[in-house]
Each structure stands twice: as structure tokens, then as C-alpha cells.
Image (cartoon, rainbow over all chains, first blue to last red; front, side, top):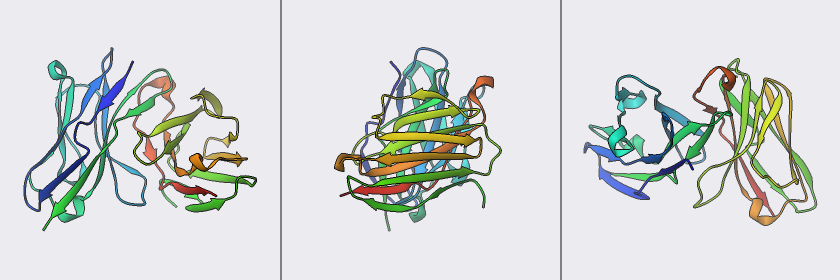
Length: 113
Length: 115
């Protein structure tokens, strides 16, 4: 069965520090992978996606993610975190005939001044 | 209006009430989705509509009834809800999945509280 694991429930980083959020997936075929961000009281905003091709994908707000098939991972990175990045981050894999998204449980990011 | 909009943003209802959630997308998409986001649980897909036809019902109780009158609008009719149905209900849209996999765009959600 398809699944997504985000091992870190909560992460705190200092403003200006680098960030890496982990995501591991289980999917039998070629995965279509996404990272979304959710600010408090808001819906989900797409940060980036991986469908095929270059395994390092660039997204909005300075985020990037690297697809590693051998590790079944799709980790999200940012070289320098801003206070406005504090939010919850969700990794997801799409699959099946109905394009449904399977989400991880999310990682809540706090940013210290 | 741009993107995906949802109304109301907040809703409090008793267990015997009937209410409806509305979603509208302004992106020219042909597929729409309802998700439920409960505290400490992963987002759960509820329903999928493709070209106004329901193509997935993820074992959702019958007290939730979706309706998709056209490709721009999606409703979720609620009746006889339980307190455990309190959650954030998110609507999303995408290009029609019959031609490939596409990213989904989400609305801001309706925060539902059942008393």
C-alpha cells in the first residue's frame, strides 16, 4: 500500500539556519511527489513537485527537494530559514486512477529569532 | 476571486442540523476533491469528482453527501453529524486525472465544529 512517513513531528530552527525536513514514501510504481505548506488557519499551498527528470527540484520561497529512489526519500531543504517559514509542512505522493494524494502526518516547523 | 474558494470559513452546527459547505475553483480545472483534516491525523481523502462524476468515495459515512453540479463548484451536504466530525474540511482541484497526474490546489478550508 502507498504510504508517506514524516519522521519528525516538530522541528525548531533558528532564523538564518539551514533546514531539512525528511520524507520517506512507499509506492510500487514511479512516484509523483509533492511538498505542501500550511500556515495556521489556512489551506495547503504547493511548494514543489517531482514527476520525473532532474532529481533536485526547485520550488517557491527558496525551497528545494531531492528525490532519492534508492532511499525512497524526498527531503525538503532550505539554506536559510526566515521567521515567516514557521508553518506545518506536508509531504505527499499521488497515485491511482483518481490522482489521490496520500499525505504524511506533517512536520510542524518553529523558527526561533 | 482567484484560485479555490470555500464558504463558510467557520461553521458551528448541532448534531440535528443540516448544512452545506461550498467550494468554487477559478482555475479551469475538471477534477475536484474533498479532504478532512482532523487534529493529529493525516489528511484523509473523502471524495473525488472528475468531469462532474464521482470517481471515488473513500468509505465516507452517508451523513456526508457530496454534489458537483458543474466543474467549477463542489458542495458537501452535512446532516446528523457527530462530534467526531469536527475538523477542517479542505477542497482541492486539479486538471482532470484521466490525462495524467497533476498537482492539486487547495482552498482555505471550512473549520467545522459539531456540538
